[in-house]
Image (cartoon, rainbow over all chains, first blue to last red; front, side, top):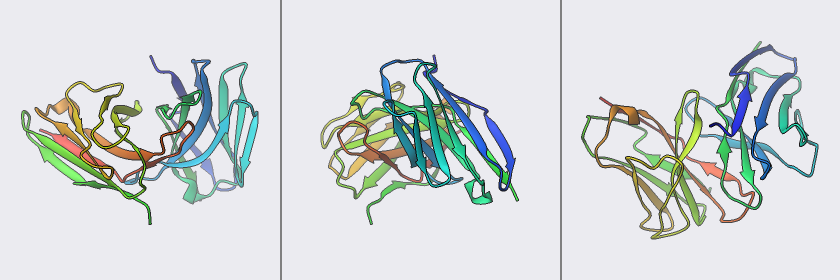
Length: 112
Length: 113
């Protein structure tokens, strides 16, 4: 049973468009949601994160929208650049825990 | 610069053989983790450690052992490798507190023939 689900599995957008990556979860105990970015041949790295007390978190071109009632969140990448092409993992963590539960990832390709 | 390194980066093993994957971190983090990454499954936790001398089972520990001889080093051991263990393995370190960022190594690609 996958506790964190991501869609789509792969996404292609044109340079300058907004890419929208979706994530949903099942466990109400999750209250911390980081997104990790992974380039080919490298390990994942933390991109941006949100706590469940917030409904939005922005960091430059990257924005997380969070809907606690529906147990859904999304990562919006505005003005997408070819350098944003990577795999993005949504993760979730129970309250106060170090443990991360990862989704299966979305592979993003930004076409120039 | 703080970092997590892994060795080897690539490994080909034979079925039934013993494989040891090594990880070193200079972050001085108490927690270290071993994950495997497979298409369609994301990252799954195999073993983790709270500090030197401790190892704990993660979500998919069967067929794997771990060893944490020091703060800096954490090894993953496959005593009898099987083709189903062909995967990319990532080591990570993190502080022992809630909401802590995990810092990942570059990964080891293991192929078991």
